Amino acid sequence: MMKSIFAGALMGGLVLGQTNFTGDILHGYPVISALDIADVPANTISRYWISAAQAQGGLDYFVPVFVARGTNSSLTTGRKLSLSASIHGDELNGIPVVQRVFASINETVASGGLNGTIIGVPTMNPNGNIHNQPNFYTSSDNGYYNNLNRLMPGTSVEEGGDLADAYDFTIWNNLWGNTSNVDIAVDLHTLSIGSNGPFWAYADFALPGVQRLAELAQPDIIKIDSGEPGSVETTWVGHNVPAITLEIGPAKIWNRTLITRAENFIYRLMDDLYMDTTKAANRTDPVVVDLSATYKATNLTKLRAMHSGWIEMDLTPLQDVTEGEVIGNIYNSWGDVLEELTAPATGKVLTVNFDPAVEKGAGVLDIVYNATSTE
Ligand SMILES: *[C@@H]1O[C@H](CO)[C@@H](O)[C@H](O)[C@H]1NC(C)=O
Ligand SMILES: *[C@@H]1O[C@H](CO)[C@@H](O)[C@H](O)[C@H]1NC(C)=O
Ligand SMILES: *[C@@H]1O[C@H](CO)[C@@H](O)[C@H](O)[C@H]1NC(C)=O
Ligand SMILES: *[C@@H]1O[C@H](CO)[C@@H](O)[C@H](O)[C@H]1NC(C)=O
Ligand SMILES: *[C@@H]1O[C@H](CO)[C@@H](O)[C@H](O)[C@H]1NC(C)=O
Ligand SMILES: *[C@@H]1O[C@H](CO)[C@@H](O)[C@H](O)[C@H]1NC(C)=O
Ligand SMILES: *[C@@H]1O[C@H](CO)[C@@H](O)[C@H](O)[C@H]1NC(C)=O
Ligand SMILES: *[C@@H]1O[C@H](CO)[C@@H](O)[C@H](O)[C@H]1NC(C)=O
Ligand SMILES: *[C@@H]1O[C@H](CO)[C@@H](O)[C@H](O)[C@H]1NC(C)=O
Image 1 (spheres, rainbow, N blue to C red):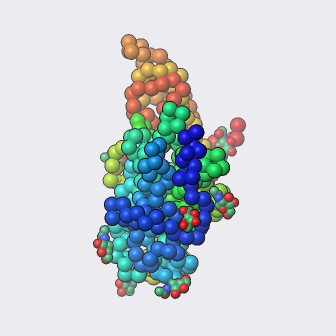
Image 2 (image 1 turned 180 degrees about the horizontal axis):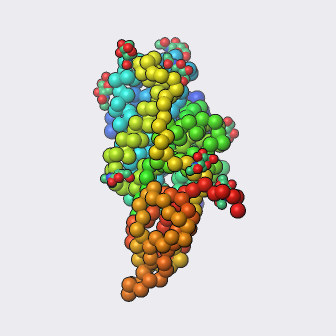
Image 3 (image 1 turned 90 degrees about the horizontal axis):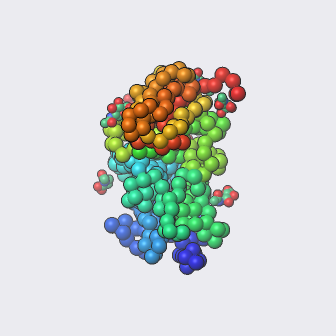
């Protein structure tokens, strides 16, 4: 019943090709219900709020949006880059990446040096930020958490979606214009709480442009795979928009080293796309990438705990391990060993849990490698 009450308010329907200003001003910036980059002023960084959905009781979930428009003519001739962060509410290192990029291009944009458009969403899921966890909380059916990064491109309420589906539907259609506002995309993530890992990209090399995008990031690891249905990355790729998921270390720790690496990647990407005309005029072609410290792998094997208890592992990200090598133990509350842990494959440590508390069935370690056969 709740759904039918809110259905009308949730979705205005799919009308592309028009920026709708609701007339509201929030914290000094206009509220929009739909974006068409053609309506955004040229040579300007604009700030908007878009209501992605409304909570029980009718309050809006406002999402902050930057739009950097370049020169008037570059609306059609320049590239349209999307930078999105923190669709998982506990994954924070992408937030300063988006903020820093927009602060740094401010003068370039104002002076007419930007060729194209950049849409930035520093905090895609403020609801998850509030709940201090990855997922989006909905109140229906006494409350549950939804992974917004598995529901893209969303479903409207009229078509049977719930609030989380409708949230993604609004972002996909009304902000990104169902690809009409975007032609290349980077979705910024970190690990989940309790796990350590490096700077790495998920990339589906099957779509032209994705490999280049991943290599420009110069990450520690490129995990080559066909993606996760419903994720931001895979939904872009499914719509022929080159995209990667970029993982910037552990959750809930500002790691300035890794944040700066991600920020510098965006500048290399902008150069590669000729988006900064002052730099583009002088640069060598193509932008040179250094992949000497980048490990590419097609396979990932997860080690799952077979017992609940207290886990201790002596591993760091990017360490090489050999299948069968002893890497730690799970103890019960008496200190007795419940399980001796061994590496499930020969390869490099991608992620490793540092949270000592473990439940059986949970993944505690990811190893990446290239399988020599498809067995
Ligand atoms: C935009 O505004 C028009 C006119 O008010 C309305 O018909 C349309 O549904 C709105 N579109 C969106 C996506 O809000
Ligand atoms: C901006 O470009 C559009 C076409 O892309 C053109 O109609 C318009 O006159 C231009 N505006 C200015 C101020 O040059
Ligand atoms: C603007 O970007 C487009 C697409 O990358 C490129 O073809 C064009 O040469 C760029 N324009 C300038 C002035 O750099
Ligand atoms: C960006 O540049 C504009 C115009 O030069 C200026 O008014 C504004 O204060 C700058 N904003 C930031 C955040 O630097
Ligand atoms: C987006 O556009 C495509 C056609 O380009 C259409 O098939 C699709 O239904 C639209 N909506 C979504 C949510 O992808
Ligand atoms: C940031 O990440 C790097 C690389 O993983 C690591 O060496 C460093 O200790 C981290 N810094 C913080 C503050 O966590
Ligand atoms: C481009 O190169 C010219 C000639 O060396 C130099 O005068 C100019 O400052 C350079 N521009 C930028 C943005 O580096
Ligand atoms: C793994 O396979 C990928 C794709 O074939 C290749 O690019 C990469 O170099 C391989 N990595 C290693 C470490 O052999
Ligand atoms: C390794 O990855 C490739 C490419 O995704 C896949 O075809 C193959 O089945 C995988 N092999 C193993 C042993 O998982």
